[in-house]
Image: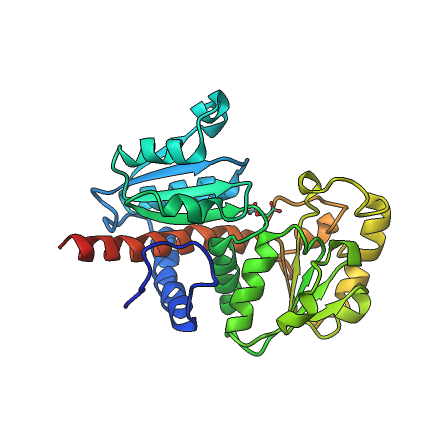
Length: 312
Ligand code: NCD
């Protein structure tokens, strides 16, 4: 199994065969995580440092657990309490950490491109855990694994990505991945939350949920990212839910076996009706969380194999 990459910075750099290789390996880690032992030594002797400059619950926990299940020494840097607050630059923090000789650095940062910049300054493998509005590759990979398991394939599906597309790194990484795997992608949301020029990406753009959801195999809802908005994007949350929130009536327009996804954290009653999110016959939101750990195990394993091959 070859994965010709030193870092995992985005989906953009991956070929379809890299994506398939990673998902196939992740399947074995789903099995391992469901077994009683739950452990392998794929990362034993390696040090993983998680640096989250933005709040996170599931992504950080998922990377932490993934590293532990593979036997790495895992450290979480508390970035809220770090010297960044004292004026240290991102690069100085990175160089300091680099001197502690980590093998894997997992980074989330509010600025697009910050993780790639950091990767140029350190000697270890860097994994992007979300940079601004740019990319969130492991989220797209875990979404892909979830879709492949639920639908039995990852190509020629009609996939509707709905809501706050403009602020979403999840949408961007998913668009890249699902496009590379030859799916039909529809973006649905108010024009104020649609990136300009998006029509040129080979996607269909809708501002009406009822049209966009028609015959969809996958309905992927996105969180309304209020922290990235400076006002005026939506009239009110009530109005937003009425027009763009996923409820029973709108979901009924998708295929009868369409699955519902959300990367979390959810705003119940804003972008999604809570009863749909909890409906185990439609929602695969908990599967996404489970697949997240397996995908991160696979990603770190593949990068660690390359580190070892380089050192040998
Ligand atoms: C997403 C993120 O941080 O980009 N969450 C996640 O990683 N599960 C999506 C979001 O914050 O809405």
